[in-house]
Image 1 (cartoon, rainbow, N blue to C red):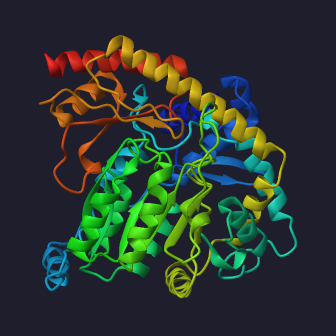
Image 2: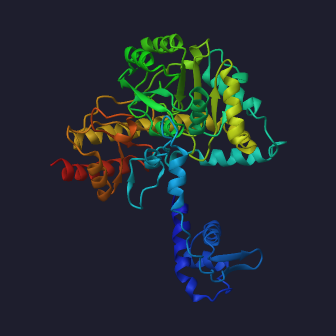
Image 3: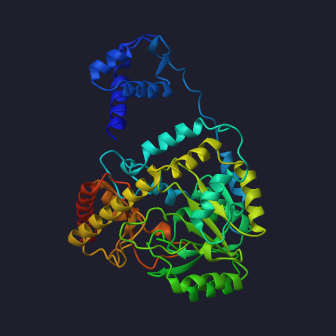
Length: 478
């Protein structure tokens, strides 16, 4: 983390000093910059590469770095107002408008300003990512025979076999497709299962990215409430009868955002209800590898107990590794598998082979189980630190369920709280959080926020973030 900070600081310092040199003028040598700023040669190289990417300097192997020639004045902007008519008219005949709203997703993807504590993050902090193991895996993968050739469209057989074993039951490698991240897999699944204009059942609350996928495909999300034991089967059956929906999308394990685990007695009920409705269950098993140390044995994926092809299963390596390690799997049984495969091929051709080879190298290395154990222990420590700090400093935030997996909490705010006002006040106080409204496809029953404990530097930052959140609540709730 310090190295990354040094790169940015050095790049900024050099950027400020560029006016000392005329266009084409040579900058000090890398050795001189290392000695002057007391940084590593790697830091100097990366800082110069950053300035080169910005068009400010030009690097010449063996000669050094030079200030770039002055840029030509940009051409005046044209008139793009015609696009408002073109884009609106395009969807005029759609049964359900295909609106693309990424705001709910961007909340957990956008990096907060410097100094702001990241309670809104959706990925592991760099200190928790297996960066060294991933770098080694990528290096070994690049040297594998055929690593830069075209992979099978469905994915490397060995990687498909690994995902099949991870899912369990009677799932085979032939029923698995390797995909480019969970978001891509969910997009493929919904396109395969529901035609534009159709309703699709979703948990309420649920992951905003999935709601965005559904709406962008012209689908109509229909909410089915979730409680501490997962989706409520009687309401799921009612929703299927009322809508005739072809699919139900759920997260049975450590649901986002509630953290609920589908109760043992409900698992078979959900599959039975969907089967009787002639519908599919899309199982987003997104954080199975982010279990906490005290969780105990995990239930199997729904797909492992589904001989009839009701479940379309999504599993990913991304959450447990890095946002850039976008390797996941779609698993399905029966004719739907060919439709899934066809859509993926048309959309993306295949996942780049070097990345698939790197995934095989990573999950087959001794570093992989060590990494999962370390993350399991650290997530528990962070969860306990956040729940303890909330209980001590923010007792008015109700926390009825404390999950034993995943990376966030879902506190309910006092009745009448303005989520937007609290989110804005928190940002002014130096902490970024996620409002609850984007997680609901209809009117929410209460105000919530989602607080992530995975994207911060450690328990000390959690304590400071809760202290800042206390100040924001004092401003909004008084």
